[in-house]
Picture 1 (tube, rainbow, N blue to C red):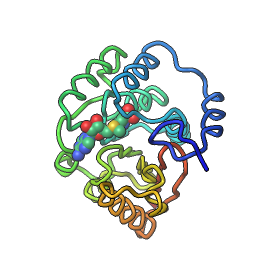
Picture 2: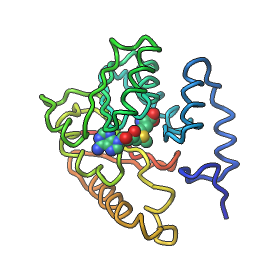
Picture 3: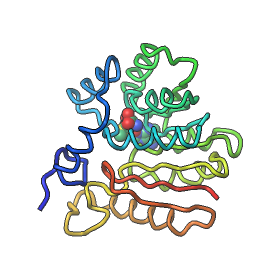
Length: 220
Ligand SMILES: C[S@@+](CC[C@H](N)C(=O)[O-])C[C@H]1O[C@@H](n2cnc3c(N)ncnc32)[C@H](O)[C@@H]1O
């Protein structure tokens, strides 16, 4: 029925190839980061997803962005560069955080991107203030999205956008037919998360079948 271009993409291969051919080729160090991620099995945002997020952030004229799940800093760098925003990014793995800091420095973005090491649940809970960020990009452990949520809501400005990645999880969120037994808990959590986003007073959510599924939630 469909052939996967890669494991974590939910769309037909010919559609993805076509869309990717329309996206301007990445160059220089951004390209090197993509090659590093591919060679080392580091999951970074798919080209069409990060492209979409960049356009959204430009439209919003985002100035302050929070990210949960930095990996090697790829999406944090792209989000900052596309609209000149300040980015705070949170990463649990020291190995990833080391690599991300190196990449952020190589791109000359130390003044624009600050990386906080630790578990996003705890780090977000300790962040002071309300309505601090224009956009929050959640791209960490899928089973924890619900735990990040209360502080994402507190930290997101009214009129801001919560972007949750990988919410369709290889299609498993949408149909039991695709669910593999060892992923069932994560799938249930993602379904509960999407259900909660869709029914949350003060949020308007759209789920987009791009990459591995992106949920966009506007804070009213
Ligand atoms: C999909 S990768 C992030 C990719 C990155 N946003 C990009 O597109 O370039 C997910 C990252 O989240 C991190 N992570 C997982 N659980 C986390 C948590 N509870 N708090 C912070 N980071 C977490 C993982 O170590 C991993 O590096």
